[in-house]
Image 1: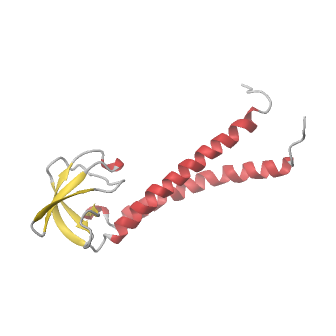
Image 2: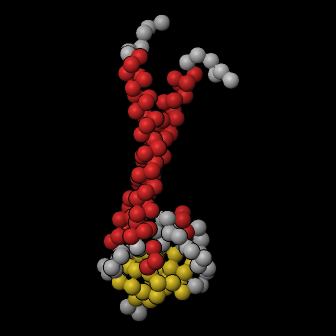
Length: 147
């Protein structure tokens, strides 16, 4: 099916802009999440009560006692609940100075950090060849000719 002359020239930049926006979003979400988990790897452990939600989207939380008070903290974006249900007891790690910075203890391992870093890396590998091909094509065509 032919889309007519010139159509791909108009569509390709829009597709590349959308891919670049998704790439930026992947970096903006995954890098801070990986950084938090690696910071909390050796942080203070605590036993907490899990509160369900869409954990991968950052909508679940835990409650744990700290210095005689109950602290409720949201789990970070990308948390894998691994079958935890509302009210389950889970192990968490929290930052000593800021107990609201918390992650599941099982989510602070090197494998989780590597997986979070692999997402933007894979997105870059998938996006880069298309962008390079588009730029090479534009350069070989030269400047636009007036009609």
